[in-house]
Image 1 (cartoon, rainbow, N blue to C red):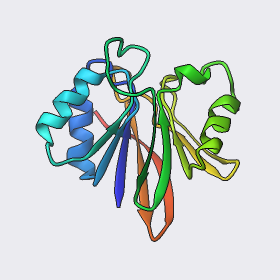
Image 2: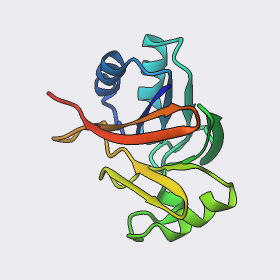
Image 3: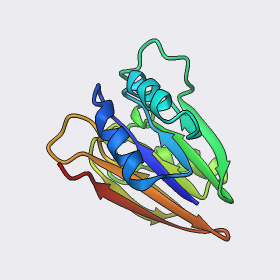
Image 4: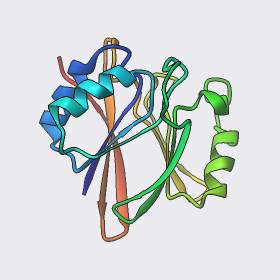
Length: 158
């Protein structure tokens, strides 16, 4: 299975649409700050399942702040990141502790607009960066097969 991970689209749905057309994922994770863009994505790809959380800019959103879900044999903890101080904590301690408590295999977060991948405390951490209005829009990919998985950050070409 192939999962695509987006965060921080901030009004630029076109980049998500291009990435989905390119990757043809089985599932999408949206990490907030662009809920209106998510609506555009879902209209264009109505058969693409989406798990989503709200970001700090999604003020009137009814989406959860944190979502723990299962996909492709993985338990995934997803959040935008602002509630866990990810901009001010270079080792993401508070975020990792919350994810550990949920027994997650992978932690997905955004908010910083900086792509990041690591493996710590027995979990994969990924921030896909920003798919929005930036000079180097990026997104994440997770490939899962037989209980094993790998993560990748991809920069969208112009």
